[in-house]
Length: 140
Image (cartoon, rainbow, N blue to C red; front, side):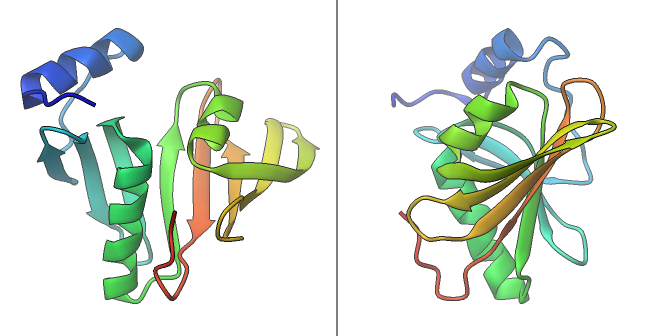
């Protein structure tokens, strides 16, 4: 992936997300020219990733490293894009799909580490995603 300025990463994000990037000051903004950007927050119970653009696995790994240092066993994010593509991009494979009143809930497992995750419907084209943070830090 080529190096980009933060403004270039935000422009790329804006092409993919109709609402566009709106900085949320509750989250710390992380940016690396070759990896993209991500907003990350310590909720007091888990690490939450908000808006991100770039190398997803890198930002997932960063969120897990932060969670481990804080002693958390869970990380999470919100997905407003195609959930099945997002699950694949995160390295997860669904092992059970539950039909709920709000839509499908996906129970998943990381294909490399076995970590479990869940994508739960939270409104139209929106999912809350949570996943286990492995204790050893063995990822990818």
